[in-house]
Image (cartoon, rainbow, N blue to C red; front, top):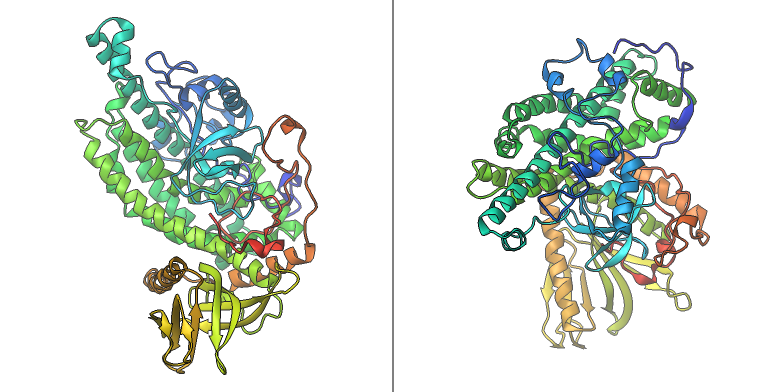
Length: 607
């Protein structure tokens, strides 16, 4: 694109004035179809419906057509790659947006089971929200709201962010051979029809992989050409260091993804898509995917910097002008920059579904199996880092709720709550016993006292340095050092200082949980040292600032039930979701939580 931005007062204004990461930002996250769709909401060869048929039922453009605005600026801007890209229909949308969102709700109202797979962990602090882990299957029960869906897993029901999941391409299993044989009067015909159904399901997954990759390349190109190129022309507004903070290594990702998509296109069998062999492409490029780790580690810094720039009107207008000049969809920059984080977590789910519909005798079976294992390892590392970085906000909020806090902030050394619970602390002199709440973080153990009248209020009483600490399991009976009888006890002995802490649990199983937690804490510290995980000073500062702001707001008022859920039995979702400062890997805008004002549950990091 050849456009240029003169000054910050050029065209703009609009919706980008506030940052709302994750809101409608999953442009690569929509489950798309492609060529060879099933042609209807329910395939003729299967009891299932696929999202490919849903896409073709709600698509804004006919098959084979492309938005002229996208076609106009392709000439000369890319390699031959886009000659193949233009031959299929693909466009951006949020998984819960537009006609597709209506179609999903229509299927739900008709009694169809709509399933989605979690891209990453959703750590919940609210009884009305649904907690899950990456890879969990969630039954979507209500997709009326664009950003928050109501769903069910084995443990219960609740709200969850729509951008945290990927809708399955094939929602049901293909019909069994026996049923098809019975229904059509011949085992031979039934077997052939069942195989044809499985081939179609594999085709659906392959089409989704290719379609989302094409969308993703377009998305990366828009960021590089629409934002980075224009920012570099304004040295008075952006330094190179600042651009590196905002965009990370997204240009390197763009180059790698172009090569990856070209390899996928070469392996795609246009005549018989189910025979395509895509597994080898993932294996050949698995080393390239490691660059996503650098991007994901930097992404919280990008969110902090964008939050800062959002307070300056000239940057708001400039970014909006970039978006309009590049003809990009109406999402703020932080939403666009979230896409690579979502993309790398989506690959294992796509490969798992591809493997599911790849028979063992297929030439691609072993490569898909190996690719799934490789991409799981990449995504697992990134998902874990994301979860840890999300926790720093929660740790800061927890600390701000503790009365009479002393010493350095928790985030100076810690980033993970390992375990918590009530223990009896036996102290000298006279072996006095005290009931205390203990919170085990990496590197340190914090203990607090409950308020006698308000049991939801905790007072800081001290901390124990876990580095260089020895945990001693004690037998029931008389303690040799304090000369008192103890049960379910263990001692924490600080080697350098000789300081000792005698602690007792109420039950043997509680003691064992604590002993296992101490072992996990040491393992967590070791892994952090090996992987180089750490919290930057900027992230720490922003987390504490967010916590102080949230504490100043106080307890939120009760929220009313929106009109579109008046007949639903589940709890209400706020009609308008507040924007919040974001330093973690950009969750969608969250509902206000009352959790930190009812600490009596004492489970601040329940999943």
